[in-house]
Length: 136
Image 1 (cartoon, rainbow, N blue to C red):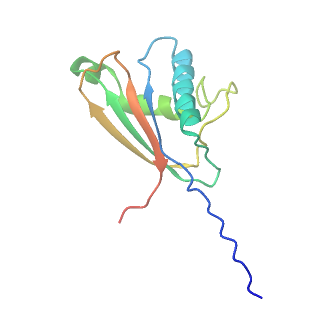
Image 2 (cartoon, rainbow, N blue to C red):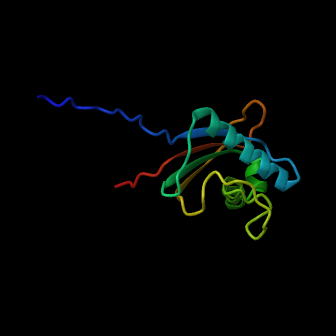
């Protein structure tokens, strides 16, 4: 008697999402909440979910005009984006949080690019979250 082999195909997990982050508008906490919502919407649309063991890479393109380049401290803007992704809306020391999209230990690499293009609607940035791959 021949045994039939059962072949189970498992779909490859999706990791990559892209979201356009909204332009800065005070108050800062509400801006972080809007960034979180934009990424959450992209994540839901693509059907992507991250596990605690996943290692991720963030690619952030900041759309800054020449004047904005002089005003914005880019490391502070990166901190705002990462805090929003971690659900830290009121800053790192605050206990006010919302559900995190990624956890602090998951981000292995951040690639930052300053882009001086002027886009319609004046978005703040384009964020792409993908699987971290070690480069040789």
